[in-house]
Amino acid sequence: MAENFIQNIIDKDLENQVYGNRVHTRFPPEPNGYLHIGHAKSICLNFTTAQKYGGKCNLRFDDTNPVKEDTEYVESIEEDVRWLGFEWDDLFYASSYFDKMYECAVKLIEKGKAYVCDLSAEEIKAHRGTLKEPGKESPFRDRTPEENMALFEEMKAGKYRDGEKVLRAKIDMASPNINMRDPVIYRIAHASHHNTGDKWCIYPMYDFAHPIEDAIEGITHSICTLEFEDHRPLYDWVLAELEWENPPKQIEFARLNLTNTVMSKRYLKSFVDDGVVEGWDDPRMPTVAGLRRRGYTPEAIRDFCERIGVAKANSMVEISLLEHCIREDLKAKVESRMVVMDPLKVVITNYPEDQTEEMTIENNRENESLGERSVPFSRELYVERDDFMEVPEKKYFRLFPGNEVRFKGAYFLTCQEAIKDDAGNVTELRCTYDPETRSGSGFEGRKVKGTIHWVDAKTAQKITVRTYSYLMVEDENGENVMNPHSVSVKEAWAEPSVAGAKAGERFQFFRHGYYIADERLTTDSEKVFNQIVDLKSSWKK
Image 1 (cartoon, rainbow, N blue to C red):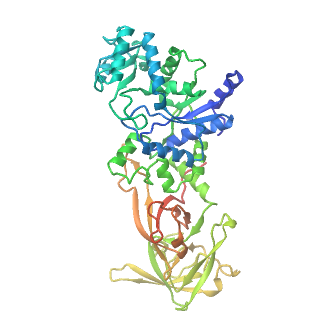
Image 2: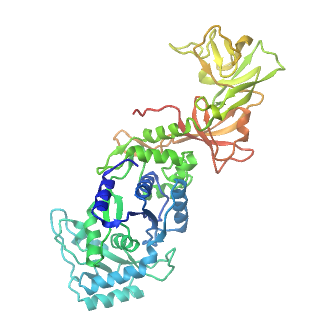
Image 3: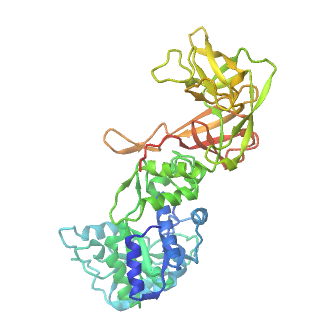
């Protein structure tokens, strides 16, 4: 990853031997949903930063909220990190530290730095004040350490209902930083935990747990997104009051905001729960699982994260840059195939009725090492319906009456006549071919301006193609709204070799874009392809 302000901070710490020669980062997702492209940026940043300095990077599950967490999410996160090309040095769970966190809470109570409060969540919010007005102290703030310790032990023993009491840090209700106005650090939750079962009915809040987790693991640089900048004084306060030696340093960077994309696990989960999408790995979803099923490669996502860089201020990134990265990655990697999405029959009237030729076509014009393939060619073919225009517009060089075009890898054909049905719709084109113009024959006669693709009608394979547009689009007020037309499913006709495609295999469909055989739906007999990205790019360097 290119030099950035985070690395400048680390360089200075190394120079001053703040942590000796150690650099230790971590990626700490909460297992309450699947990771999305924004998490991929954080994964790349934390792991590549550790790699640059020969340091370590942990994977830690911040599982302090048993109500929302699940082992399904734990497993998906591990898969996503590995798929992106990274391997953690150590795997930890925040829940493994619950005993230590409880001890830390007890220490704050004994120091008079934490108290049990009976106010409800609504009352605590009302007492908090505003940016212009100080907060109001809780009537329970002056309980003695002995009272607080007894109440906290009763909370731990399960004596109270959810929300009946909380443990709050005792800091400053007049602080200009609202996060420092006696924040809640423990709450009651009578819920089974995926890792600790029913051992606990009180759980630490994230702002209390996170610095302790970092300190226990020996993290040197705790890299997080910008929304935690205002929480950094609390992070530092917790470690200072717990008298932690050489505590970790929190550094914030701008989170990824992507056009036409929702970057909220809460919203993404609602899409899944409400059946708006097929699941977390729906190819329209910005989750890593969705991008993987869509056909994106880890190389393209890492390239994207490298290009957007690391900034201190939030900004919006065009999704066209992500699409550019996958095109760049695939253009020399995948083989090309001819697929007709909206077929119009072509009959070559001067071609022998019982003849079939094998045309040799290169698999990738940018990469000769991918070799060639044979494609059958005979009297009846399919072409794209929009490759014919009865009355051509200016600069239209494809099929129209009297015009000659090259059929890719085959011959020059001239359109002679369009056959129509009773409603006036074109159902068939009758053409002639020039046998002297076979591709690769060395023909150097006349030139043609148009080249179109085709498939042989006798051997064409029926496939299913799923084409995607953005899940979210802007309405007339500039707000992101659900796109009711985010996916279209249709049958198409492909050259015979596509029948052997395996699930997860990628191709460029000539003139259409890049596609992948869907890993869920593709079988030996059914071929279902997801569009990865089209061939057009509006993004400019």
